[in-house]
Length: 273
Image 1 (cartoon, rainbow, N blue to C red):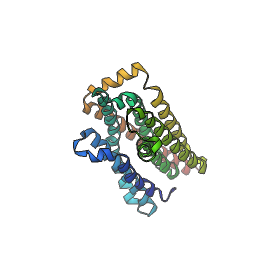
Image 2: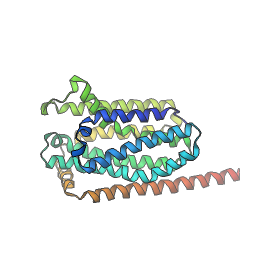
Image 3: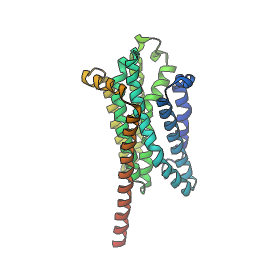
């Protein structure tokens, strides 16, 4: 299995996320349950990936398989959590938040890109579960999309030139986001160059990260999209949750079936040879 110490990278994301979202943690008792679902499911997803990496590299294959089955049930909640964040951003605009009014529509479209991309990444991870090189890489790239929400906030909180001290500094949020995306793209490019044969997951991640940066800049100023995005604030949360779960279940079903079919085809070719 590649990336023997990947679980340390996953675990590092936990304190990094806690620091990046310290505002959420300080007001956790007053936050919407929608944000709680996203925060908890994302944390569990990272911990599950860390446990899967550690278990397989320590020869605990049975535990690794059980965690893999657990991911089939966690992933739908994880994906639904993204759509809850999407709705929360629209609700912030309706409530009169000037920051959200500026960059919220871009964040909204970027979130939809993340939902579609994450769904495909997990599908591909299931499809290629018998190919350890590709499977490990598809699962790894799912966390690269955390870059804009974690690293961007860390940059805003630690670098004076990117600090947001008032609405006049709102552009710093964009700048920190783009820098975080470039860092993630650089990491994905380095990992791709380290093994081009199995580098498709990293190329996919690079395209997605680039599209997210473009979306943040473009979709803030598209009137039709802004209206559609604001309309989602009135949608019942269970509807968005159901959509996320349905999309995730589609990815799970398709990936599981495709992976099984590929395994059968491989076995037949081996017998013929």
